[in-house]
Length: 605
Ligand code: GDP
Image: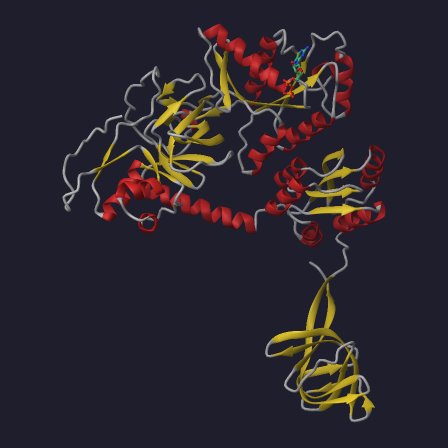
């Protein structure tokens, strides 16, 4: 595409302006500038932009760097729209950028739905069926693109569906602080009933306090047994309306498309009860649902607007990156200028690929953007250090803290029998001071999803006769979740009981008694005796002792004997000489310092 030269001025050095695309990799930029990558990166750093050689930056950022380097740049025609794309009208000027949420401006917003359930129960089929039904009804051709979420219209109202089925994605988003889901559609195959991942999904929805609508799928199958499924759900505490509970159940078939209209009706009813509202006039806040890098288009992020209206041209901070929205594309591959609350759109223009769950915010100017990014970086750094679920030790220690009213656990055991036995025994533990809440219990090894659930619900993971798989271990390490594995039920119960009544053994701490300096050494048989002068405090028989040489600990053990002249001494105080031998250590030389210390119990609380 021919560059559109807007300013045909020559740079002071007589060079023609460099034409740049809307986004460019730092390495490519250096080539275009005929500069070294190091110089370009250094210039960007000086501007407060941390970029690597492979990172893509936008035109505005590149021109800032160019300015610093004394290079003239011009913009190429933006290569945004694919052939045949509808060209959107100019982004309208935003009248006011409200940053607050005014109750008088609140309007109903569409519910956001996530589909969860056991593998093969038809989650993907259901998502496809809902999409197809809706689109063929509304649009010729029915071209849709998978952008991570889509909207359908039902009786003049909209419903937003998150296009990634399963509770793993849902909980991973929550772990990043994004609670985008308003309603969980629990898909249960009528011919297969409640299965392990059905139970998991129920726990995850409950932990997030998200209402459940059961989609009893595959109702077309001859061996469908709705009554059996209803009873199984009741066993899991999901009491459907037929059984006197408040969880709606809709029989559907993703294959024959039976019941889909009813499902949408029910979702909208639940949405009404939740009274979902947002302020379409304020500066938008949203969450990233999905993001990736696309050749020629740069970073692409699907954003779900939570409140406010996102507009083309808005300057947005997304996680730890920011940029101007160059273009927005909806789930029908249509270029749009605006995205209202609950509407998913792909945004183009970010210099970096954000992560799912990252928060998007519209900001007034670049200064505000940089400040927000810096704050977010700080928040993340401190989150790594502080905002993690409590460990069991902290639960033990926190008894006097009014915060710790509940010990939450995610319990996994090797077999149904042991799981039931542990649950039964846990229920019998005294819970006067702290209640025990089993957020989720299931049979099997500890998986990534268990750990994320624990992280998001502030729980400790307890495993019995099982193991932590490798991905789960990585997540536990990075999210600093306390995972305890037991092989003996008694030990597990004992620890839980201690945590509940605050009776864990007191914390052991070191107390230094005194120091002795080695003045001479003698050998008696195979033993080296250190002839010392106690320089401060006191040295006692039987004390723990470490040998310090030039400030480094060369030995840590115990005193085996302490003598004053030829006699055993109970203790030797500062200013007096003594002979010391160390248990299992003859490595002492003149000038060493022997530090005598004790390990004492420090009561908690
Ligand atoms: P997921 O793993 O939960 O996403 O399940 P899929 O959507 O991949 O479906 C698993 C299998 O069940 C596929 O072979 C589907 O064709 C089939 N299936 C899904 N929904 C229905 C349904 O309503 N009726 C019948 N008979 N089969 C279905």
